[in-house]
Image 1 (cartoon, rainbow, N blue to C red):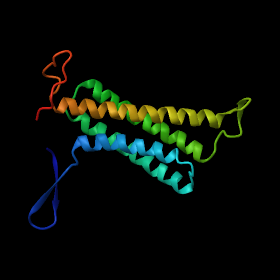
Image 2 (tube, rainbow, N blue to C red):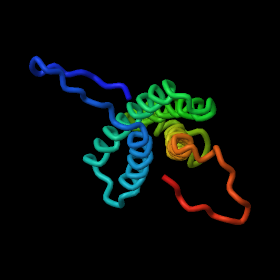
Image 3 (cartoon, rainbow, N blue to C red):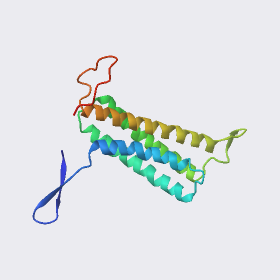
Length: 163
């Protein structure tokens, strides 16, 4: 495992990176709580700012997770999914900025549908995609790391966890 060396005195103290599986699953849970906060009936300005902060954390985690996965020998599909999650997170952030400044709320496409409404729909759909992609990457990495794909299971049976 790679480590950073922090020099506090003459003796270096190794500070280890956070385990990758922790940050992979943290991204899933943070995205989940994002949805809960937004669905709060008394959604107020403080929750808006919390939503923004958590969105920035998700963008950071998406980048961090991808860069850490890229340095492993995890299958290419997992790396590609993690890479696409960064793009989606940035897209959701940009759409979120448009929503925050109410861009398009007054521009009607047709009766009852505004550009702002379409932006909100795209923001939400991409956010759902992020949580599903993040969960897929976390589970795939977990199974790869546990070498669960090396031995096939018997059809009709659920093997016990080993290790």
